[in-house]
Image (tube, rainbow, N blue to C red):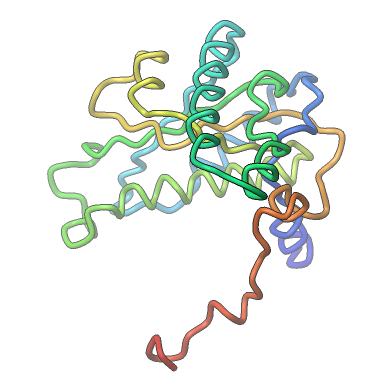
Length: 208
């Protein structure tokens, strides 16, 4: 069991081009969502919701918005960086089986959320834990997940009729894949290289 957990953690990838579009069995999707909902949350507030987006028209509208934001980002690049980015696929919105938008409700559990009085973002961190649970569970089910970050939150709120107080934290593409790449896309394309985990460890104080 321990070895399988570590395998899933290291096999997880941010999927873009490997989606097959095949259906996801209902019981599999239920397990993945239940795993996401089992995440820890500050004050047991469970401030997340999951919007399941299957409608092709909605996904096409979102994809068009993503392409516009990609162009905005690309316009600020030059030289080799621009060339590298031009070869990177940034989303699998239309190729994946469906999308899941994970949201954050800052009022869930209010007015007194145990543990959030000193760290206002603790609720948002809780949502990120649910996203990680979802991602690892999907990987264990041999599904791919791709987190799309090229969007403006107000656009998604309007598109999916999300209340103004609710924040769309992540648009995730989900579905069966042909395979998971051994090396993450950004490393393969030379955008960034992963630093050794040892370089991220500090003892007692930052400078030590």
